Amino acid sequence: MLFNWKGRERAICRAKLIQNRAERIREALLAAALQHIAAHGLKHASVETICAAVGISKTFFYSFFPSKEALVLQALSYQQPKLLAFARTLMSDPKLSWREGLETFLRRCCYSSSGIAVLSAEEEQMVFRRLSPEEYQAFQRSQLILFGELLAVFGIPVATIDPRLFGNLALAMIMVRKAMPEGLPFLFPEMADEMVSFQIGALADALERARDAKPPHGENRPETENEP
Image: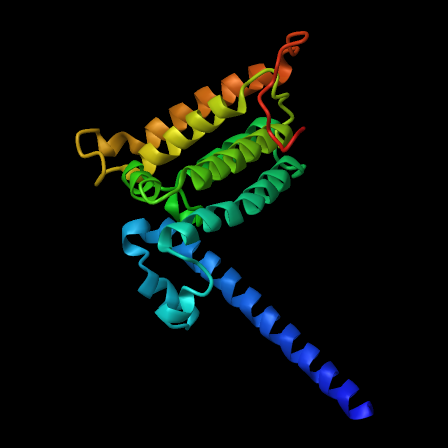
């Protein structure tokens, strides 16, 4: 009996070690995917490249994710708490005004050097074509929750601005900046930074008005979390 008990204990310990190792590898794959997308774009973030960065085989990769597209979606979702934490850090920094914190957050999101991964329009189409309707809807819900929570971090009631509008405005600005100059050659690349500054200022003005506005009485707000 004592021998059997010790054998079971060793088996449990081995199972926990395997589970912990698998979780570490999974998180490393998510982090590597985000890093490669932010630095080089999705086209250059191949499964082989990501596996090489983590130190696993391509065959082993598919025991964690059924496809590259599944990895990308989960990596973008994995990034969301980090974005919220970064926004909270800026909003709680006593050296920054509310507007300075907001503009710093938006500006960091616009540049690949920040390490924040955002897909281009072409990359979104590549991923979208491989998604099931259920996967697409699940990701859209997570995006809606993210932008609703960001508004809350910035102290803006969702009744004064729709999180979907905020998301569209912020993502459009980020995607256009990251596409320049290669992806949008007919724009004026020498004005890219000035364009970003103008758009950030305009968006900050709108968010500041929304923050200071009184929510319309009884207005329906979009769902930002799993509510009954």
